[in-house]
Image 1 (tube, rainbow, N blue to C red):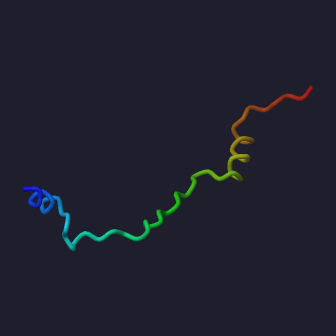
Image 2: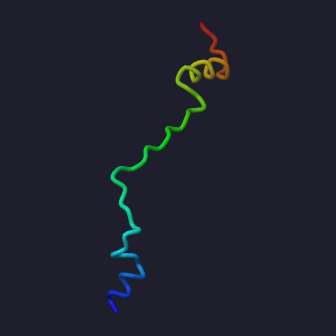
Image 3: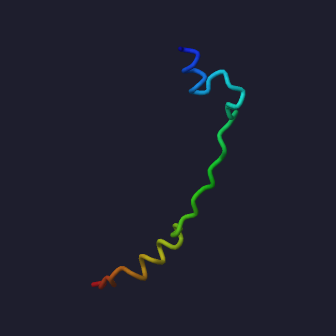
Length: 51
């Protein structure tokens, strides 16, 4: 019975191949960069009155 369970799961099967290393995931592209952030702040923050 134990052998039947192992066969049902797929143990002792040559079809199973273990990957030697994981595939690298592509890095997500940011929608707002650090350089855009400063520009967005100056465009959208209320003007500060100097005394």
